[in-house]
Amino acid sequence: MSFSTLVSDLTYRDTQQQREQHRPPISTTASTVSRARSYASTAATSVSVSGDIASQLHGGYSHPLARAWQAERQLTKSMLIYPIFITDNPDESELIPSLPGQRRMGLNKVVAFLQPLVRKGLKSVILFGVPLAPSAKDTLGTAADDPQGPVMAGIRLVRKNFPQLFVVADVCLCEYTSHGHCGILHEDGSLNNTLSVDRVSDVAMAYAEAGAHCVAPSDMNDGRIRAIKLKLIESGIAHRVVLMSYAAKFSGCLYGPFRDAAGSVPSFGDRKCYQLPPGGRGLARRAIERDIAEGADIIMVKPATQYLDIISDAKEIGKNMPIAAYHVSGEYAMIHAAAKAGVFDLKTMAFEATEGILRAGASIVVSYFTPDFLEWLDT
Ligand SMILES: [Zn+2]
Image (tube, rainbow, N blue to C red; front, side, top):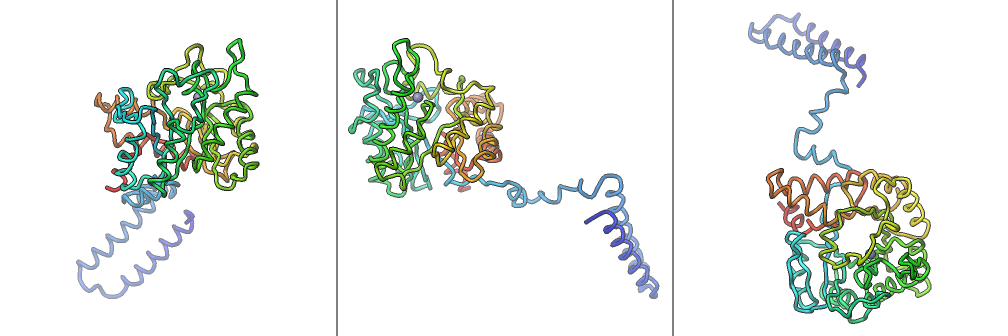
């Protein structure tokens, strides 16, 4: 309503009231009430004069439900993907000290671990292999697609026991290479992109053929999305496999706890030549554009809360596709540490951080808080 419409409306109502007042008053009290109502209208008008009618926002979000309606996306259980670390020691179930409440587990422990979560509404997991045997690692990451290895066997196990659960397989070589890098190296220690893409896309195919609903290459080698998509098409399974690209994966210190969990610390150097520099917004946009053009079905941004602008960019560039964000191990550990130190309440911050990620444009969140959210979203 415009200001002039409001004024004429109030003037009309006042005139009506004055006409009614020309009738003999029923009692003095009734007349006082009438004057009070008239005064309230005038006061409302003066609020709009001193500010603007558009400045009056509180009424729109005073009720809890009306507050919830302000969000474009509400956090739901189907938005969450839970990371699971599967080791090659079948009976292991070890808490990861740097990731509070999270564990590495062997194949014999996975079903019992997932059962209560699935009952509470868990919809999706992302599987990471953690080879612990000293002989498991070599320069080519051969163990990555070992048919009896933790991820391949894990995919088959989870699919068989939880037919409704959507299974994502992280695709990378760093957990399986003796040097801890995400591909195959030249003699000088730099990445051999061609060989790496060939190897990474073979691993993705193996996971897809083992039954993964989604393969998610996190290696950041140039051209791997196209290579995987082409192999999926050639083998006739492209119609049933989602290709989720870690298109905008930034280097930084937030992956520390994950590397403890997955045993994927590089034995020399770092991953700065293939992960994005934290200030590289333009580079991230180019990587997102490229991976969409190469056939990605979902774009992922990682980490999340330090890169909300990139999530927003991804949603703008890929406006017709789902955007995922990985709320990474360091972000999760920071929230736990700060809550433990009394800085804030854990649950409140977990929601605030995750709702920020959704607000920026994501509709999928890979989160270590998933088991908590399954509880919290029910209450
Ligand atoms: Zn990697």
